[in-house]
Structure formats: structure tokens, C-alpha cells
Image: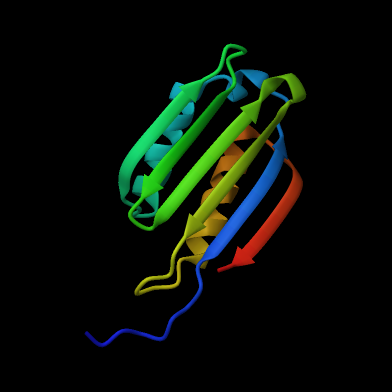
Length: 120
């Protein structure tokens, strides 16, 4: 197989402030939004794990053929952390990573507290 040169994937880690705490407790809505985002960018879900906590916060992990999307919410602090990583196998997915994160920022109507990008 003739492969292109290795290109590290982009990994974004963000912490967001969200005023609408109902979005930080609506795990079902997050799953629906994520499925829509996956379809929009042609990403393939291979599994999903959802855990709702007693305070209605949630943690969700989407395992993707291309890697993963993970979230953890803290409604009591109006915050969430989001982890999006896509490998670059056969194509550069960096633009998709940034676009996926931007779509989540729009969905949550969020303000960025921390924003890290790691090429790995």
C-alpha cells in the first residue's frame, strides 16, 4: 500500500463557560447534536457511552473510526470540558476538528475559558 507521509492529527481541548445550564444537563440533546455533527463532517461513530450524574451533569464519550469526542459538564459551575481528536489517516482532518469545536461552541452559546491545540 502506498501511503502518504505521516501527518499528526489535531487534538483540541477546550473549557467553556455556558450560561444556559439546561444545555449542561441535557445529555440526550448533546447526543442528537453530536450525531448531526458527525453526519455533517462525514465522521463515523463506532460507539458511544453516556453517563448521567446525580446532579444531572453528564459525561459522554463518542468513539469514532477517526478517534474520539468526549465531554464532561459541570452545571453548578456553568462549565464544560470538551476533547476532540481526529487522526489524519489518508487526509488532513485539522479543519474538521476546529469546525466541530466551533459547532459545539455555537450549540452551547459558550464563551471560551481555555483552548489548547496539540498536534500528535
